[in-house]
Image 1 (tube, rainbow, N blue to C red):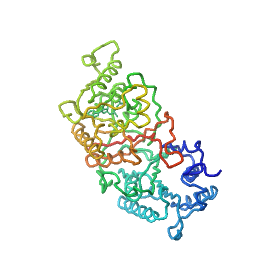
Image 2: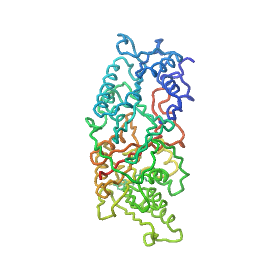
Image 3: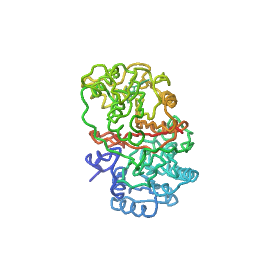
Image 4: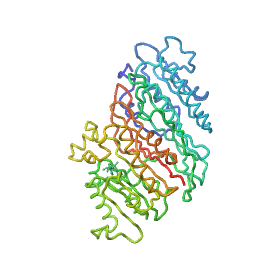
Length: 484
Ligand SMILES: C[S@@+](CC[C@H](N)C(=O)[O-])C[C@H]1O[C@@H](n2cnc3c(N)ncnc32)[C@H](O)[C@@H]1O
């Protein structure tokens, strides 16, 4: 079993599955073991591997048992780390503690305490080795507190935020409530930070933000019956020829997951960046009215065709032949210029933005494959296309500006869902989802996020033998509500 690679002792067969950005957790022991085996190199410079663990006493015993079986020494107290003790890995598991805190102020204090611990560990952790934090967002007293995002931001001021994995638990049924969009809270975040040359530098663009500057008012939503799981594995049907032309279409099934929670029949559903009109198709096939805009004339035409085929296959002009029981309108225009006059009052906005300028990163693997097949790799070269803004901060600001403008079309109490993911670019993690969640909280009520998990893509061995880089197969469905 002599060192198989520079980073750890596992084979490529074991490396690959660990890189999936979400996992089903049946057994915590297994999770600890996988993390230790991934982040610890056992025959490194003939030192015995030392690792640090923070967690409640039951978890501490479990972790120690696993570490012993694997051959690593565990420290659980800062004081016992003597002058020359070097750590290869640290795992801070705050799931039990954080889960019990219901008070906002106490939660903040707790996050500050954990951040201080992470800071104390910094000079003990070996350069380019990892520290992981297992944490979760908290839904307490009808208020959603994105505690994990807050902690992530704090720890990223000390280390480099490299990655995250979503641990999916088999449904733990949460208390039912008719008063808010309630989720089962059957997941947690495994956040991964690295001590490296970039640590603490230039984290995010919205530093000093306060995730708890919350609009805590939760409105009553009558149609809501049951809590929904926080994660859903969605296997979309194969895309047809026209749909494949769009580089970032989401499956209609994702929209359909939420329609029953946030809308009723005949409600108005809207997407300002429609792409191939997946939102509108899903809305129409569930007897909701469908509205939207799309900048690219190319995708606008594809949308028209898709909707045409759906609505009345024998009719050519859908815009003149809308079935009596559903209303429909799609405009080809820049989402920045939408006004109240363009559409009726909207009940539910469902949308997914360009993921910054990632489609213009031609080196990316997916792009290379599309080029080979002669397919379009970006949405357009139009400068109005938000996917062509290269500066991250500017991109977010423009996007938030579009969303803020849309709030005027949304009826009070109406819902707003954004499908988005955090972005890894040139070795850096941009918490796009957290940033949007945070910024939009100023105008909207933040509700629990739900993950759309992808399970139909082959894993690629990024970073093999050198470092941890996950394959991001989880997308955030961020939910908001307009205050009533
Ligand atoms: C992630 S894609 C949406 C995909 C869509 N949900 C689907 O399933 O086909 C983002 C879309 O935003 C559009 N877009 C970019 N900038 C825009 C703008 N300023 N106004 C309207 N649409 C824009 C792009 O053309 C692209 O189709």
